[in-house]
Image 1 (tube, helix red, strand yellow):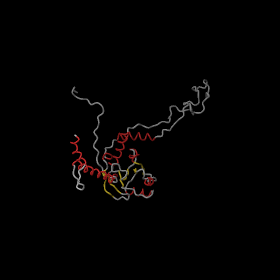
Image 2 (cartoon, rainbow, N blue to C red):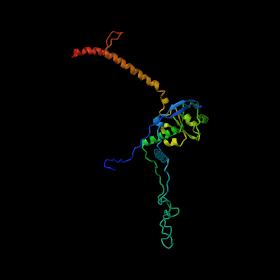
Image 3 (cartoon, helix red, strand yellow):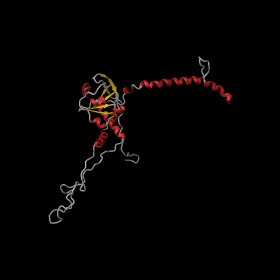
Image 4 (cartoon, rainbow, N blue to C red):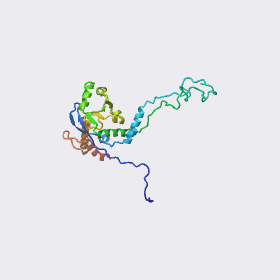
Length: 276
């Protein structure tokens, strides 16, 4: 190594590939093909980060632990106030209490006590782990999409028929909206199905199931979720196009053909030399 060579210190940032666009087939609950939908690359197009997934899922599993295990120390065990036997003459080791950890029925030395197993995980890591889990399911063609549920009442038979029509085998995670209680109750009795909302979706929930099922309302980043908002957005745009036209007439001072009078800005321009 010469004096002109540079030494790189610290960790080297690895260049991650750009997100790719993946597609999913949109079907009805009866299994009818309604075309394909492009999944949002920033959500479903990442390369899974396995090290990040391991760290975040370990923290999520640790947070589930109750941490209520407890043992009694020698001060909490009942009895043991009297000396169990004489100090000398027995041939045994001297003891001052029958509740010592070295004696049967005594307390536990260094036993578990109630504690919290929760680990601090940055929000960015939790979000990237969820995106990695969703991208992993999308890369394996394990993402299903339905247009709408359309169920009038909670029936387990409808849920079983929908999974059969969509050709979903194994365990499935159904992502629902907060007000879709009928669908949630329909999937409640199926041992291979779990329901959740997208706001409560976690990386561990995605990876513990073979499939993840969305609807048009819950698919993140889908264009179909914003179709209902399009008519409301056109009204302000029309008003915005009318205002510049009115300003152009006022600035140019064009005479109105109906009244024969000039606009206000033209009158102010003529009175400006008088005031000076």
